[in-house]
Length: 123
Image (cartoon, rainbow, N blue to C red; front, side, top):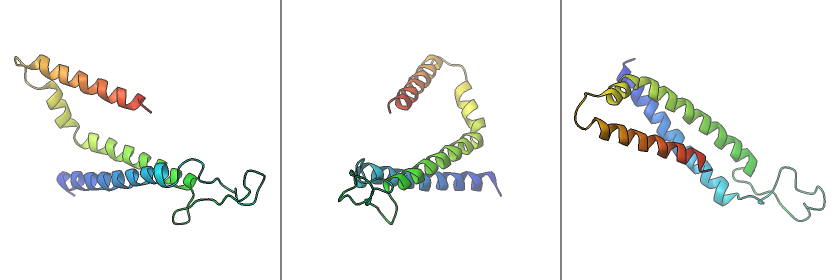
């Protein structure tokens, strides 16, 4: 299989995985919010009186959370493969050719890195 075909299919799978990841995230956040029912809460204990477990397609909030987690792991793996396939391009862009604008390239890279670190610490 050609490298271009592998890149294409990795990118397609990553996009599809991202769409499913976003969908399950919205589902867990807005359709099945916290307090929408727990495992085994039907008919067990005082807290469960009159409460039904909310489900979508027969799956509870926690089961959808598990699906969301595994989709996130799959996307992380696909992004690692994507970076591996494009590593040579990344190195060439980072090294670049020396010019008067080399400081600008370094500044943009530093701002991007700070942005990624900030976004990862946000949750």
